[in-house]
Image (tube, rainbow, N blue to C red; front, side, top):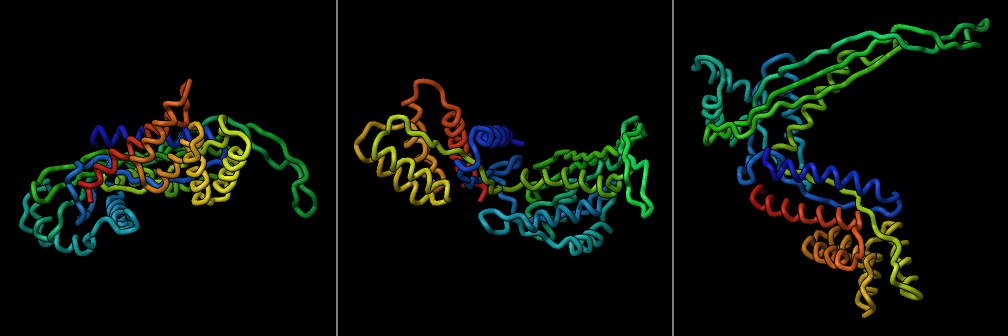
Length: 339
């Protein structure tokens, strides 16, 4: 994973959590953002790909699920990858493997990939696939008395043996560039799921393992492809420097925004900002959100910076916005090379 990719995803998580905590739901708007691949080099541009059978327990299931994830991944409304059908890949690989000695390695995978016309080959191995079980004492509610037709009339809390189960799934994925035979991506993905039952009701082992496997495999595609994400951002609803008719207009804009009419809200905020009155932090901030929701990131950054200059003390919403928009601009630059 590139440093910039890791940094962006960490910041994205922090920002998303902070804006959710800072605002009530009725004062939020949703922003669409684009995120570059978390791990692949910016200029690799892998789009046509084949998935080979993974080794290890559940390897075939992993291959099927990863192939489906790659096929179904969309970016800006369009399929991002062209994936060679895995059944066809297996047939061709079987023919190709007859002339090989030993296991598949990056060089042989690259040669095979060039033969079938793909830019990259994804393969790997499942390194952990199991459930650990432990027991402990706990309490459970039991029926201790029933009526004549079997309806429980009395419950009691009793001491009992409880069962804890921890499923762990780990898979190492490797992506080979068929042109250079270089491994451009190699990472272990780990997923886990657990259950604790004192009443005999618990998920089946196969369900726990499936949950752990899905958690691990869901980490792969965002590492390899750009994604669309939705951020929730708080609006400011109190314009401290406005009064009279302009205050009323500002609150009208807030009402439109709460009703999902950002078009009218932004129109009103723009008219207030252009009226020649002293700049207001809330108006500038909300206008910046308008620009951001429209994809005008440079304009949004300038407005957030203007709002920041009017502050006498730090504002957590504006701090988060400045970080978010700067990272969105950086991601947009990266995506110009990815597309």
